[in-house]
Image (tube, rainbow, N blue to C red; front, side, top):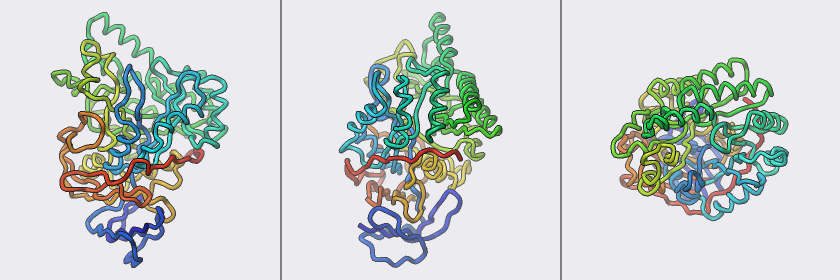
Length: 463
């Protein structure tokens, strides 16, 4: 199967130029002007962008949590991803008690077999860090192809500081990267107890129970562990101005500390928790939504290079029957998480590029190129000869009003309902195969479940 995309604006993380891209057998074979190869499919991309497909490095598909489970599985979640221009994702494989890392990965890959519509990989989530599990880190990096490891500083399954230091030391030895959900568990526990005594358990107090300083302190402490060990750390879903300042201070010292943020922390605020009729429950996630000041600081962090990647933390739960079933009288019982995988690229173009907050090249970097580099996806992330032909032909002028009725995620709402967007995927290719395309008033899936492959990733190298 061959593909020739002509006359589009080819965008990299550093430059943009009009040209053609020729694809054969799933890889990019040539880039230039006026390419004349015969191809099975030819696309005229005049007036459109030729982008590398986005890589979402933070998803929770079919994840058990808080008495239920996230409602997108590997089929529905990857179909939605493809329709949004996401051509690879890295999902979290969370340990069950007593599982080895290998057993955890095999179990979750079994859920994906025959279902994934795009390529994927996994981050082992270390929640039962026995000495045997920590010793298995070397095999996970070099044999399993999963060199990044999630740990939590919050929730009942959090790791203590001693374990986190051990993980940092072990990953440093073998070429791994520790990812951390950084919030101070004791601050949150204290405030939960205070609000319970005061009878203030409404949705807005979810945000108040997890204040900015809880993230700030945890990131400060985690950075000190990096300073102690000389290892590397990746802070997931950074949400606050104060947390960003801690990351910037660490990076100024030369520490290998990296961060991602998500569209919700760039565009939404904690005012959503005040919506009537329990609507605020749709936005209950951890960390919670913050203020305009943090929104603006995180956009600045992207431009300064201190926030290197964009992710979604896609963890959907139906509002009707799940979100509204738990926590009517107690915010602590509302399942934490929200959908986002399908709107990642369109939001970043419309709210970022079109509004002048970031450049088109920066968008490509944080959605694709830097993510591929961070997580060892060597064949992904850029329009480069020899790379996988994960390509989005993107129409920068296509208008679209976000509506859950026109999306594919297995959930009954989107946090961005009603957003007026400019710019949508026109055609989406996974290894040269058309998996989604614009069809009248929305993007439609054209691929097939089972097309996606598991991607073994390379060891981490600080940069």
